[in-house]
Length: 65
Image (tube, rainbow, N blue to C red):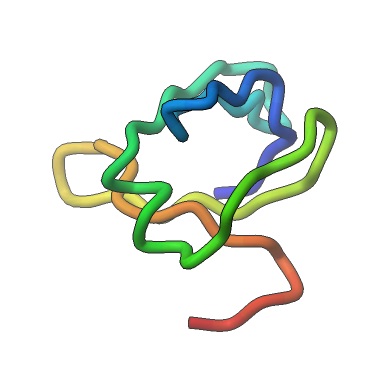
């Protein structure tokens, strides 16, 4: 799923607004998988989730991993 970063905290957790308007939180562990140092508000990202729907990875759309 894809969305736009609407909140990013210094503890590396944040929130993304999906294209359908739904807000999805991610935690520090999901961000750590990305290998990134920070995200900008308004940045487009892709989220990967597990079978239960928890976000397990946050990726910039142009990066493959």
